[in-house]
Length: 323
Ligand code: PBG
Ligand code: ZN
Image: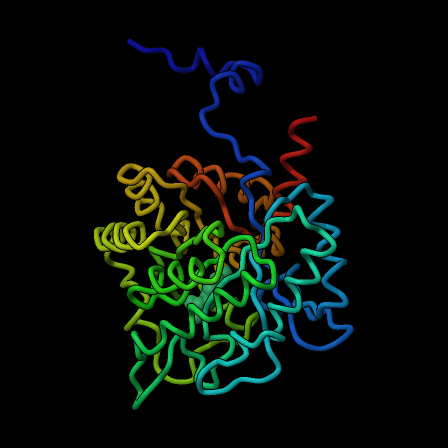
């Protein structure tokens, strides 16, 4: 006969036995930088999120610093797209420019560069396309080149999100050969072909021009297969693993954390963010409580880090709780 309520009787005792905490140190904030000047363009489907040109990104970065956020995940929106996504590996591409500027002003801010081609290709796919097919091995050198170029610009961590087979190995080799053996690879390993990426594609102008991403991103029905992806990426040299989306895939996060001794980041993606913001704007839910409950759930599932558009708000709320 267990009386579990004994440990719930007041706030002090509840805090004493609380199993999970969301820490500001573990939050990563995604940011969108766009080519051009004097741009701070709100993303309609993601209230509170904007695309910034490099001259205006400082406003947002100031907020990041003030919130105590230590890491950002950066996405670029070029002004020119082509068949091979050359903007991704252009030494003067948008990410390269932004990263050089950010690292100069904030050397201790962890800058994680998302590596993919979809923002840079005219067809919007994450790899090279031939006759309507997304090519795997032909894409690998371009991803590797992009990763090296971001590392050269000063990126602290390289995060491939393309889901081509063998890309972690290709990127690891290229980084090592170019003197970046100390730069970690954070692999989007369990990345599902999800409708939750819809708002992101508005933000990053990266929707596929034809078809979908089902030939490279995972089937949402396949949890066991996620373990194969993770195992493969670890063998290829991944230092950190991303599972994505987060909330509908907590079982996957749990499985990974129980089977592999590697830090896991849960990516609380755009659609998950937009749903919370929409319901909150209608007064249907308590935004702060819902967000903290979601983030705590991800910690409970086994995530070490959380990539989230709520990071600035969450950091503020975590601070308030500590007072
Ligand atoms: C690019 C990429 C996507 C996301 C992160 N990197 C979109 C996609 O795969 O279509 C989604 C992030 C989000 O929805 O917040 N490959
Ligand atoms: Zn992509």
